[in-house]
Amino acid sequence: MVMDRRSLLPNSSKKQTVTTYTMTTTEPIAMDDPTTADDAISRVPTVPVNPPIAQSENSASAEGLPSANVKLVTRNLRFFYGSVQALSDISMSIPVNRVTALIGPSGCGKSTFLRCLNRMNDMIEKTRVEGDVLLDGNDVYKPGTDVVELRKRVGMVFQKSNPFPKSIFENVAYGPRLTGINGRAELQEIVEKSLKRAALLDEVKDRLNDSALRLSGGQQQRLCIARALATSPEVLLMDEPASALDPASTTRIEDLIFELRERYTIVIVTHNMQQAARVSDQTGFFYEGQLIEVGPTRQLFTTPTEKQTEDYITGRFG
Amino acid sequence: MTGPGLLNRQRRRRIIASMFAFSCAAAATLCVVVLFLLVGKIFSEGAAWLNWDFLWNLPSRHPEKAGIKTALAGSLWLTGLTAVISLPVGIGAAVYLEEYAAVSRWKKLFQINIANLAGVPSIVYGILGLAVFVQLFTLGSSLISGALTLSLVILPIIILATQEALRGVPDSIRHASYALGATRWQTVRHQVLPAAMPGIMTGVILALSRAIGEAAPLVAVGAMAYVPFVPSGPTDQFSALPIQIFNWAARPKAEFHQIAGAAIIVLLFVLICMNVTAVAVRHFYGKRVRW
Ligand SMILES: Nc1ncnc2c1ncn2[C@@H]1O[C@H](COP(=O)(O)OP(=O)(O)OP(=O)(O)O)[C@@H](O)[C@H]1O
Ligand SMILES: [Mg+2]
Image (tube, rainbow over all chains, first blue to last red; front, side, top):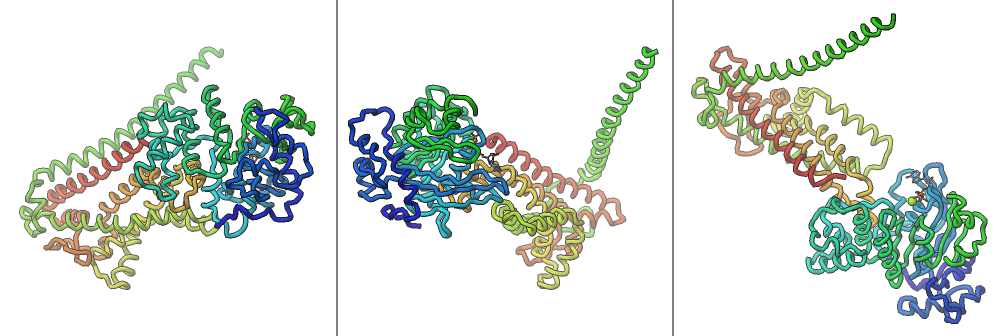
């Protein structure tokens, strides 16, 4: 499967791309200077696609073409477990090199949505998906799509940590090995780099050959993050990656996410509002299988347009 | 009035409870005692005959000269060939059923059939082996016919044990592998099979120890009691330990019963070795793999 990065979004996504733009230009919360070019442009919501932010920050990969600022798009995505509908008409754009946070009460479909993006839902029997998921403009549900290739590009960290019953080293090296990297030195380098980025290396560097199952819950979670990083995906889907971590490790993971955002597109599910506010550029609020509201994180948290969103983030339910 | 009545009832209940415990203990003891009696009798009769010559002598009409060399060799050949045939087929079938086949009516039908086949008496497989391998495929009463027939006997056991082991591997392991961009084959090969290996090995060893003890299907395919040579290849005629034991035990002379006992000791020794291996495998891996 050759995904053409430069291909334009199909015309049918016009409506989508308009909404995309207002979201994509989210400035990181930290840099709140209204005089920056980025921000100035974000005030012009009528520009349909391709805000300069994408060009200025990603000119290397974007090549100044319109679809470059959106990595993933879902259009009217519906998902069914048997006859039970878990997602209804989710239309959402996920900007490149940005962090998108998904929040919402338990059971609202965040994990289901995440699994739709790399087709992990294919594994579950008797499920059905409708609508489109476009990665760089190509429908990942198109017949003939190479799912294996897709999953190499769209990595995932699961809600429950699931290390392989092998050594720490083998856990992280598994992904690179699949792609044909076999040199011990090369693997060692990748493993150490990945563990370091997942803030785990210091704790395990003397026992890389110990079983991963002997790590603590939080260490296992970071190991799973390291394992996902080792394959250098373009998009990283993280389902509550910090749910079993202490505050210090959580901070490190958040720092990591912030750092990774320069090279990856990240979608993170979290139940922690502060975390969503801290790390993400865009936030989507799910409720009962619907995407109630999506927008720049700061805007969603300060001036939500929907009553349900406001109730949720102020803790009135969920 | 509740006083004595209640006490009585309590006493009755205690007595029933202790009687039940006693009967269970008695049943367990009986099993062990009978087993010890059997083993004891076999050892008292056979142990005296057990020596190096007994293992290395050819069968003979004279009990003092008779040995189990050819029968033991035949059993080892059979076990080896049976393993070579039934392992790939059995494990392959189980992997297909668990990891590849979609849930369907056919799969369910297949599954029920395998479970039933595991319960079919082995003589039935013997007759089948005689008709198919010996006659139809004209393999004759050879080692390969015997091994193929024994494979039929233990295939359902291997398939069921392997399926059980594969089902014990949590789906989260498969998902983790797929999410890293592994193909189905890579996932099976690098994650699922290694994780299931202790269970599979245990099942395989137990199935093979069943094969080693089988006599009926071998009689049906025409194994012989008197084979004066050690088989040199899969197409040779053969004998096997259970056949030899059966043959000696059926003779009127008391000495033959005693050397049958000696052969049983050898067979038991082989079986115990295999079972110990199974336990060791489970123990060794069990320490490493825990979900
Ligand atoms: N494998 C499955 N089979 C059937 N129903 C499922 C399955 N997985 C999830 N569901 C249902 O789909 C709905 C959405 O589940 P999902 O796991 O996506 O929720 P979530 O938002 O991730 O919740 P949480 O925050 O608790 O993780 C729930 O009602 C859940 O019961
Ligand atoms: Mg979830």
